[in-house]
Amino acid sequence: MSKGRRILLIGAVALVVLAFVSWLTFGRGPGADLKLIGFTVVNDSQTTVDFQVTKDPASTAQCEVKALDDSYTVVGWKIATVPANPVDQGTEQGRTTRQQVQLLTDSLAVSAVVDSCWIVQN
Image (cartoon, rainbow, N blue to C red; front, side, top):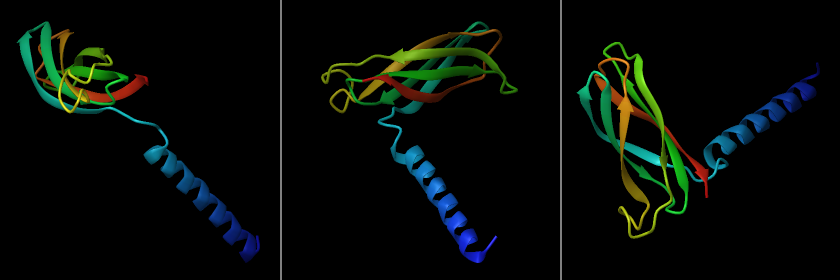
């Protein structure tokens, strides 16, 4: 392959990579930010998880909530739906709302996480 073709090929690959990174950063639309507030292990079969979600008030989000045992094995799991809400609910004119999710667990949980939240409709 000639030097000119090699430079052209490297430039084309760099452009594709740049376009992909730009799409990942900016092109996926508005998202939902989350913050874990805390959790309570009620007993061997139930854990309560408190978190807050910041999103466009008109959007509906879903969040993946997990309870983990002492070896980080998932012992409880749920997709929680965070509905659209009026601007007078929550804080920041309805952008941030607090959620509480009850998880049924297979065994005693020692921690809980909210892995991610995403927008499902606007």
